[in-house]
Length: 333
Image 1 (tube, rainbow, N blue to C red):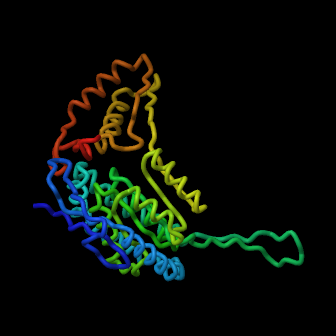
Image 2: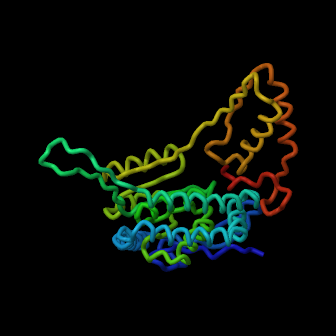
Image 3: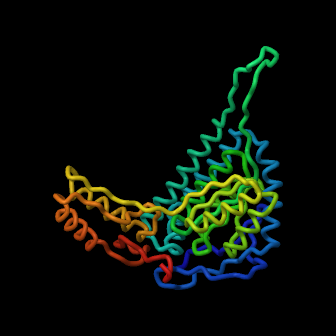
């Protein structure tokens, strides 16, 4: 049984199963079977999404923070209720073991709840005036405007949840552009907000050619904030696009994560933790260990324990309960 939702765009509160830029298959990395056909947004759909986000922002920014919290937390309750089904969707399209996928769904709900609470505490401040002629000076925090959110495929719900949750909590509208390899998890995240009663236009979802979509959205006067998680070269490019329009830009880019094992460490315990960290999500994590620097007194004990742990790891389909590591996302990896 597939259990994979029909991929769609989401613009102004409506699901669209076609896009003017054509379509592409969504593939299960475990067996390379086609899960569904993803519509791709062209300029027409992107313009509709920007217009919807502008209208949605004008309405959403006027909603009191507590009322925004109520809507957002209704969505997180739905995510928790649907966790088992959503975990299966994630594993089908991304490959990670089912237990990892379920943890990601629940963590996504927790992150959004945290951000929704913080939205109620976006306080301003009073500043003592320098002159008796001024009664008071105040700093007020206001939402910046419609945001374009770009997320990768390795954490297909967690990363969209962070960006969407922050935008909505602050009173911003958003256009989410998830990775075309893993649209289903983001679609189900958006569906939870839709079912929770989020007003049309406040949250939109588009997929398409990454270069064309990013250039069009960032170049639009309607987008005032851009958030990106992905590679350093792409992050630099998007930063340059944002600079042309003097737009606020937040980037979470790739990294290199050394593990330092000092002479007083418990070699067996560190090796066990290192195996889990190295092979989580098939190593497709920006913080996945890239090298181990081990004190010479522990070198053999650490290597032996790490190798033993790696040998015990079962590789297979993420849907199988015995699997400890699923497939890579595609052959290019």
